[in-house]
Figure 1: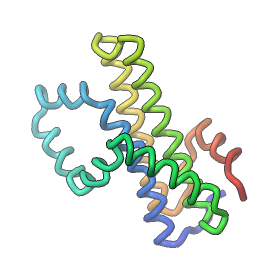
Figure 2: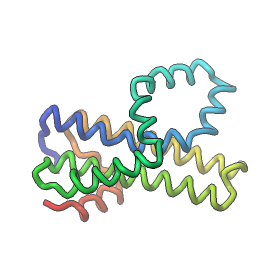
Figure 3: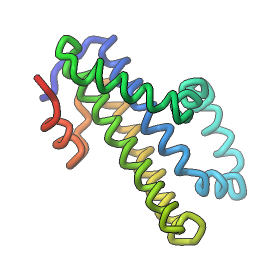
Figure 4: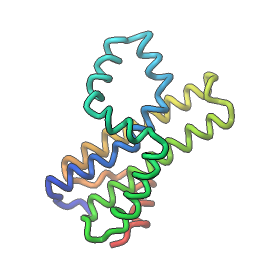
Length: 162
């Protein structure tokens, strides 16, 4: 499945991972609080890295705009066979990863676990796992490769129109 993608395709594929990045960052509140208390220099460094993405993250964190972007991407990118498969694959994978992180956070909140040690641990797992997936997927996209995430990539391949 790995093939060469044009530089523009690589950029658009990497940009799709803003959605799961925003979801992961919202789940990482306890992690950032820990960094604020234990390693403020590391937190400052992370915030500086994320600074250029703040406008895009703000749009994605707005519930109405986030839903609108999701609908537009699903309707006009994923189902459009005129757009390269590389971009469509990465957009759908980013949507699924974002959905998993958001649903995980919502379930923890509904179960009342988001404040205790178990909930904080699970939210940190969602955050760190989401960040690992985003970093890996963006790196693979920039290199022009498909990011193969077990189970998620298989689900994406089953849903992709050719």
